[in-house]
Length: 154
Image (cartoon, rainbow, N blue to C red; front, side, top):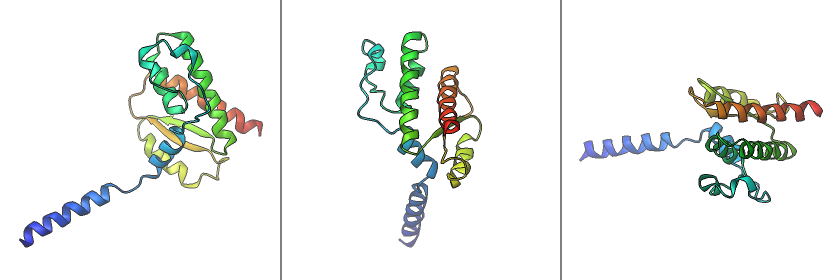
């Protein structure tokens, strides 16, 4: 009986520890996934089955939609325009974002976000691990360029 109780206590402790809040995940969901409800559906995506389900109200949805529309230039251009619009909205709220990817990018984002007042309140968000697509790199670059442009304009 004591053995079973000890195992149960140990498993419970592991589960509680594994649910510890990750600060990078907070930034990821709170900012990267933030949905601006005032934004309407992108007309170029309304006739496409996979993209129709997305509302394109967050950077996360723009990134996903951009990936799925890789062979449709007009759709990608519209999604990039929306991503820039959302980047501007986030900046206006005081949370400029800088997307990073690559090996250990989540660790780098966590390290950079420990003190967000050191570089214009820039919030680093890891969007890709070791393997990253060309589409992700392109939309990441556009968002980061827009953020830096806004910061430098200030």
